[in-house]
Image (cartoon, rainbow, N blue to C red; front, side, top):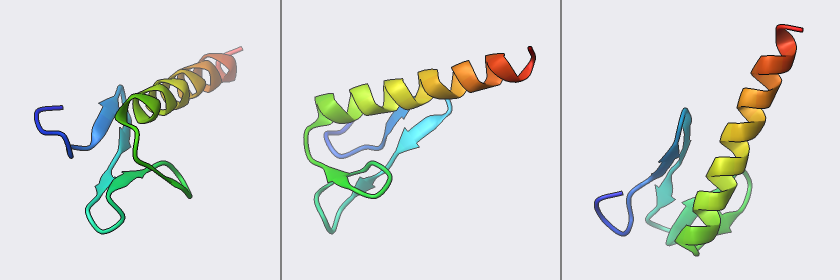
Length: 57
């Protein structure tokens, strides 16, 4: 993140910043706290990795 209103990216997960609502789009809700958005992106990324790992079982 170079600017305060950049999209937040973790792995293949990107949570875009919404200029109109002044927050990050977190799948149906808008969050304004960048630290919380970072944690949400990390959880989504880990969930995606776990699903991918279980598909190979």
